[in-house]
Amino acid sequence: MTEVYPYELRLPLAPYRFVWAHEEPVECDRSRSAQFTEERYTHADGSVVIIRSYNRDGSFQILSDRGEVELDDHAADFNSPQAMSIVRLP
Image (cartoon, rainbow, N blue to C red; front, top):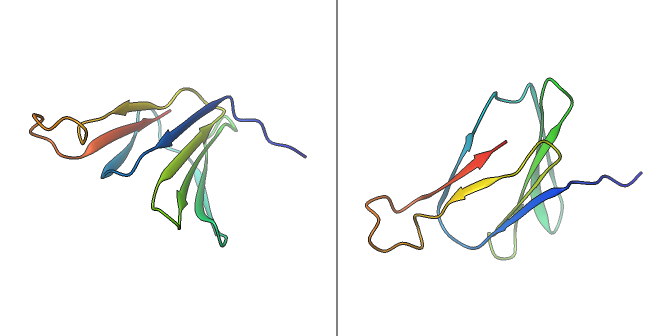
């Protein structure tokens, strides 16, 4: 069975803080492979948000069938008083 996630965001190397834009999930499953560590969040309506952290370079990939992921990229803005980027998960 192939899972389809219409929303995907690949994040470059930077410090991130992940926050939920709406309600928090009801379940979280964690798994680890040689390539990445995965956190799979399931919401009450059955939708899923997946956060993958790649072991090789520390980058992230966000997959979602719930909605679009938003990024406030403060880390790339040297004039920003906040050095950490915010990732709003759907």
